[in-house]
Length: 352
Ligand code: SF4
Image 1 (tube, helix red, strand yellow):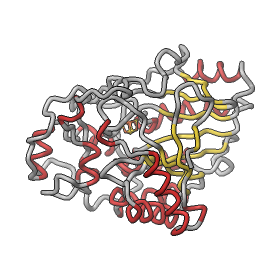
Image 2 (image 1 turned 135 degrees about the horizontal axis):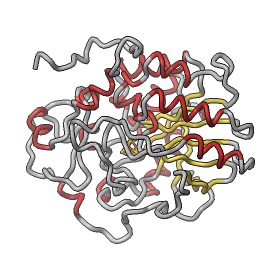
Image 3 (image 1 turned 45 degrees about the horizontal axis):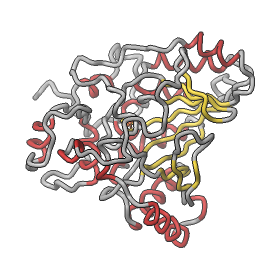
């Protein structure tokens, strides 16, 4: 126990130049991966818990510390605890709800939107969200030794692909979580993308600053930040995945402020989840807190109908009503677009 990392007094950002193995990787390695252990730690019953889930459980300590013990309905716990209902099969919920299967190029890119191309940077995440639409992609991460060292994509080949297609103006880094790549890997990828004259924007979709805020090291902030200050041409946009105000503790808030200080554009996306955030006070608080931190709420996603996540679905009628009410409570810029991804559509469909 004495050898465990102490999280409470951590200050972010952390300089990695002084650490050969960055702190965030140690935190990832020590994440709780056993549902029984999680229940024990939080003093809750494991009666309705799948103790041996197909989509493995992964909960790092900084996120775990934001879950209230003895509360089986804690909104953060519900997002990560494998429940027996995940194995209930419901028609309409599939393993590939947005139709990505078989559409990846050999370089790991996906060009389903006009002018933009998505790069799947790997299959690793800092946490395993039970509602994830890519949960059937067989994420690695079940072993404590499974540190994120693999880098399946080749930045040179990706850059060459974009050089050959000047209609692509925006590269979107997705995953898994792009911030599971090492600083060196990310820097290499971003530098190669920046050398493509037609790429004007590089967008990173990530949940890591929310899950393991220590991931935003000084080094990472240097090259995620403002393009002019760091000699880059393409504009950097970071989209944070955050679902509940309880996810925004002081460590996360500090990390977000550091990210904002570095000068990039910061947006957020949220998935509408039953019993987690499907009510007006919670969504209002979340979007107001984000605005106060300097993050523009961008998307509220209708759940992708992925097998195993049925119990998270909220009706679009309820989602639409929530957006209407949010508009009467919050300034327009604090209310995100309520969207849904429909397989085969050239962009997200705006529901409200
Ligand atoms: S962080 Fe994103 S990609 Fe990873 S499991 Fe969660 S929702 Fe899925």
